[in-house]
Image (cartoon, rainbow, N blue to C red; front, side):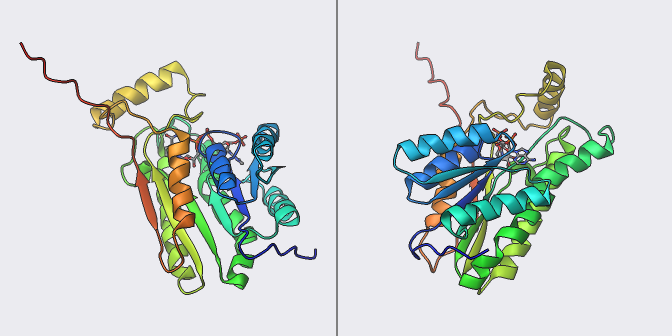
Length: 263
Ligand code: NDP
């Protein structure tokens, strides 16, 4: 397929998992900063609604069905985006899934399915989308990880394992890209208010909250808004050439402590 080359100042972006939460907010933030954006997820109708919202405010966006566990679907996503906007100069690997389950108790197929979304899907995406960046000697890759990569959370075993593996992949990638002109970095959010976890049963939530509390992992009730994480992602891809923001950990600020009562 002949390649459509945009003006060098135009930096087309791919965002996976753009149908909700952080991915949706990231697509909106990138479009607001002038990036033509391709939004991918399985619920393509949701991506289309976000793309329409972006276009209505003067941005450029296309929605494409994407399942990151399917290499044909990844190929169609990357190629459709390239035909619409030119080869990507920004890749945000954001799609993710987390389900309750322990190391011993999780059915191995279920475990593998989660690793497939959170880890293998990222490598497959980069394998397809990153080579034109290397040819051009320009581009930014953002890997959306999680604080669980640093502090494991019990009873979300496949998620923890895949996010820690993902950070290892991202660090290896950054080393391999050194000197190519392509930057890779990790955005590592703490708890955020998104659709993540909204499909868990009440019983699973009760057990998880009790276990996380026992391990001191529920320090306060603050949660990030998707737009706040999107801001960090936009910052990572926007820092001037000559600098490399290779890790941003973003946490919700703790709510203000109650003021001392004076008698
Ligand atoms: P959401 O559940 O709101 O969004 C997850 C996104 O991933 C959806 O758009 C979903 O789209 C997409 N997705 C899931 N499976 C696939 C798949 N097989 N193929 C393509 N897309 C897929 O959660 P968040 O916005 O919170 O999650 C975004 C990222 O942020 C994830 O990587 C998550 O691990 C990370 N994160 C989230 C935190 C939180 O507290 N919320 C904390 C730290 C990190 P669809 O179902 O339409 O395919």
